[in-house]
Structures are given as C-alpha cells and as structure tokens.
Length: 318
Image (cartoon, rainbow, N blue to C red; front, side, top):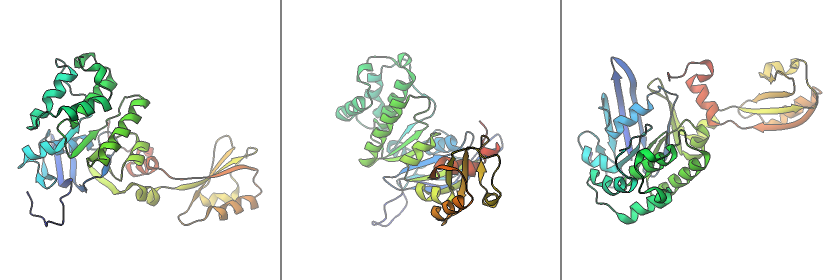
C-alpha cells in the first residue's frame, strides 16, 4: 500500500496511464483519473470507446497492458486479494451459474472473497431488489430483469466499498430502472462509491457527481457533470410561430438561427453571457409572428454527441 499522510485518505479508485492492446491495436490509450470515496462517477462513451476493457482491468478480469490501478490505495495486481474484496462488479454481460438457485448463489458467493455470509445483509439485498419470491428458482428460469437484479445483489453480497456498474439497466423496463437507481442512491448515501457506465445519458446527468467522456481509448473530458454541460452545452431560444415562415429572416442568419422544415419553429443559439431578453427584443423588432418562447437549456447528451463526433458518424465502433 502506498505511503500517505494520515490526513489524506486514498482515492477510492486511482487509474494511472492505463493501457491495453489487442492484436497490436491499442484500445485503451494511457487514461488517468481518480474517484473520491463516496462519489457516483460516470464513465461514458460510445460502443468501442474502451469503457468495458478499462472496467475489466480495474476488476482484474483482464490483464493490465500498462499503467497502474489502485483501489483505496492498494495495487490491484500486487494486492489483488484485498482489491477484489473491496470491489463489487456488475458486468455488462449477464454472468450467472444456471445450476444454482438465487438463494444458494447468494449464500455462498461472499465466500469467494473470503468474507463470511451475513444473513441480515443478504436478506436486505433480497428484499430491496425484489428477489424473495424467486429464491428457489435456478438462473435459467429468470427473466432478463430478474437476472440483472440478481447480478446487483451478487456484486454487493460481500459488502464492497467500490461498486462498478457496467450498463446495469441495459434492456430492462422503466420500473426496474427507476427502482435500481433509487437503490444505488441509497447505498451510495451509506458510503459505497459508485463507478457507472450507461448509455442512458439523462440518467448519468441526474446520478453522477462527475463524468468522464471516453472515445477511441482516450478521455475527452472529465469534470463535474453540471460544469461540463454549462461549459460545452449550448442554450437556445426556441420560438413557436403563430404562422409559418417561408424562409429564415435575413436579420437572424448571422446568429446561426435554424428554421424547421415546416417553418413553424425557430431555434436561435444563445451565446455565453448573452441575456435572452435582448434576443427576444430583437425578434419582436423583426415583426415575427411569435406564439410562444422558451429558453432550452443544454444537456449531457448534446455535450456527449459533440465530443464524440457521433452526429457526424465518427463515434466508436459498435
């Protein structure tokens, strides 16, 4: 374990110059970041960005190609027994043992980490994740949603301090998605640090304290979620018109305004620091047939698309 001052707790996860190549192709290109204890941190990126490979190296499933991973100050290669015990992972792929029942699997799984079964903790997970009616079922009999609930319980059964969720709500219904996020917030409030990947960017914006956006094996941006959206997002003044326009007014062309194909909706970008009232006044001066006006705030999805080049078809491979 690294020597640190008594007043400086180690990061929950610290990645330094992490690299990985397959068949001579570098898929993770020297990424570095740290997650503080108690954070919900989002690692976002299109398919093929290198997220799952990075997570597999953190979890010890894939051999590290270069660099270092530390979990609460412990090296995950040298101190692997400790780091495995400190980490719980729900992988994107459904990984189950088809011959065990839910009950049997959860009773024995903590033992794989050298941790005694805690019946009170196990039963809390069973009840919070809605698994009790299904305890006697073997895995092959479970629906996709129940399998994902079980995988969350399995990832938490040994009481890890760091929980990694790789696309936890992929393919599940809205009800389960909301209940899962409620549970994640609950265990985070109790002190569990969360590393999350998801393609549901609205969820990431609501859940994550900070996000890193990754593409082609590199980190493109890393900062608090709200600051990233404010810095790179684009506010717009959206105008619903009482009657359609045949063309964009000449007085708005220099503002990069956009008129929809039907001529009924006008969107005008708001420059940073530009008050919307000033622009509204200009619109009235042009005599536009305005029915409604609203200011549309930027969101994480827009920032994500802009950074990864997906709007131009330049994102990661599927």
